Length: 574
Image (cartoon, rainbow, N blue to C red; front, side, top):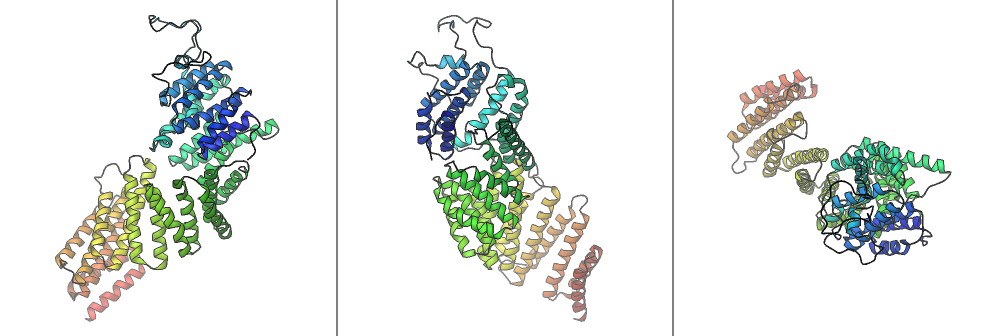
């Protein structure tokens, strides 16, 4: 990469280096251009990027220095209210831990802790022993307006790293959405006191936050609005304007993710446009992430040749990412493409590598996706016992994530649905393999998750009821088959008890789901009739078969009626 020629180019490079986690190179470049003369807005971009790197490195001395320079620059350029709001917000966030409890810098021209508390730098401030005076002193800055504070809070969310990037914990995206919306609402009131227009930056940050809370439609709207504003600004300027924060790339990255499933061709176009803008950016994580989204969009669109080419390139490029935990997503995408192409042996290589990395870093989301892919491979290749094991792992990972307090509510509902669906598949596969104990374990897990007294439901009550009936019916079928195999402890009384328990849950059907309840009742009678017939209990089997036939006739299921008629005929002839 060529060496930057000015402060604005250096700000772009510092931001790219920080995103690529090359913090030492970013700090050296920021220090080289820190004191060069430049437009205040350009210097502010450089200092903001440097402050982000300092916070990520937890370097208290550099945090002090960068914050001091930013406050001084804002004061000298006439944006004192924004400087005061910046200090107030940074003190709220707590990254200025190096400032408190230390003496002011020895340099007389420096700005110490007192100057940060009073960005106007009042010359007649009282000494430490002077009594407190009421009212505002002459020359003292007025406190920032609520609108300016709201704007500063929003900008801090889009420029500085959040707690999740520093301490490994998650941030509540709903709070982020609320603060960014408040910042956008405050822009018209304080626009005249700002060194630039922050609306595009706030909209990109809001698009990211909305995506995290699961509102893909709103995220898409905000990202498109941001792109439209950037294109309009370029048109007004007669050319491409500098973009130190890579807002256009960030907006297109959001669109590549949000559109990749429902409108994959549009998602692929945005991913390609974002990649085309990275020809002067040395940022492997960003490049590999975009290619991952591009591959997923090609797969969703059914573009087999494009997906195959992209997958091969991604398998090679993911090695350029230094942090191992960032490689699980690309590896899983490559494995998914190879599964789609029915190259199962080739899919195991990236899948096992991604699974090892995910387990080493306790990445439960990647472990969940790895289990899903592994179960799919085993099902496609006919290895049903191995598929049963992977389905159990899938359900366990989904349960762990659903119970994690850091998981957002919309995502928890999806994870609970994944857990219940995986357990339902475990029921069926365990029944096919004759593993009675696993059937009862999976049924117990379903009933525990879908129980009506289990707190505020995340899924519709009719869906939870259907899963509970499914679990009870599976217990009944397993008990009957265990009797047929003469397993230890299996009795006809236990089989009949399981049947009554299943019918009891069927009777608890939610309002408006009578047809589904009739289906389950007819299905139970049908299976019961076949079990009785297999044991030579002709009279009881006939009664159950006739009840099943009546139920199927009421539902209009001709094939099931014909099957019940065959069984009745056989019993009558016997």
